Length: 133
Image (cartoon, rainbow, N blue to C red; front, side, top):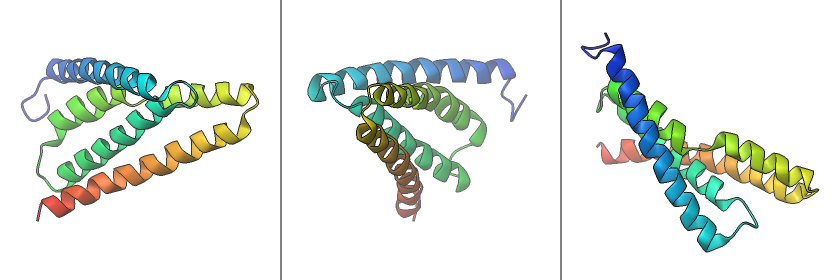
C-alpha cells in the first residue's frame, strides 16, 4: 500500500485514466482529421502538444505539493496521458512519411513534435507557478 492506497486501486486508476485518455484521443483525432485532412499528421501533433502541456502542469502541481503524487501521477500521468499522447503513432507517422520519400515533411514533423511538446511541458510548469502565487 502507498499512502493508504492499495496496489489494486492504483491499477484501477491507470485503467480508468487510460480509458478516458484513449477515448479523448480518438475524439480529438477525428475532429482534427475532419478539419485538416490527412496531408500532415496534425492530429498526432495536437495530442502530443496538449498532452505535454498537461504533463508539465501535473508535474508542477506535484512538485509544489498542491496535489498528491500517488493518485494523480497514476491516474493522469500514467493512465490518462499514457493513452492520450501518441508518441508511438508519431514515430510510425514519421516513418511512413520517410518511406514516401517526403523528407522535408518528415523532418518538419519531428521538429514540430519534439520542440513544441518540450515547450508545452515547460509552459505547463510555468502556468502552475504563475497561478499558484
